Length: 263
Image (cartoon, rainbow, N blue to C red; front, side):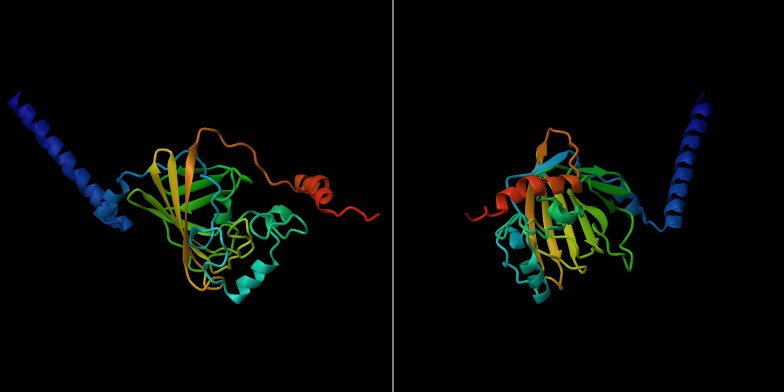
């Protein structure tokens, strides 16, 4: 009996040593140090849920609604002056240049946060997805790679991410310059570098801290902070439809904006 117990202990010790060697070899072959192995098993903050904008906050320089807090370059100033947005201090539905209203183009990444519709965060080990109810747009955030050296210019850019404690940090470059930063028509260029920090303040509150760096459009980097509240309602179908836009323009906008004929 004593010999059998001794053999069992020896076998368990051998299995433990053999397993440790295998894991060390696997980490060596993959180029991952052991501390990174421990990092992968660290608790991941839970950002799940349906989130909707809290109040009527808008993204703007220094988090305010007032344009011009951060000086724009001449290029950006000209684009902003030419914009005819349906919201903000210059709002108009007459001959709008809003790319969403006019063409059903995808809204800009940060503009999506301004709409009174929901978004959800879906977390996996290698990829985080941010799913927006408005226009059914979804973003993918790669958690296992760096940015490509020469990314293509796209509507939503190239996003990579990582966790810093309880915060998901999303770093995005590679935008085109066809979208607006907000509903008021503030532009950005293809040089935009956006950093988003998503943190759950409490069970029902999600905070998104934004940092914009775009030397072609703004004379310095600037930031904004938004809070979202947890929603108990599932996301519905909220698509951008050109036929609906045209019907709205014909049946609502034109009758209310066309001056009556003079008698």
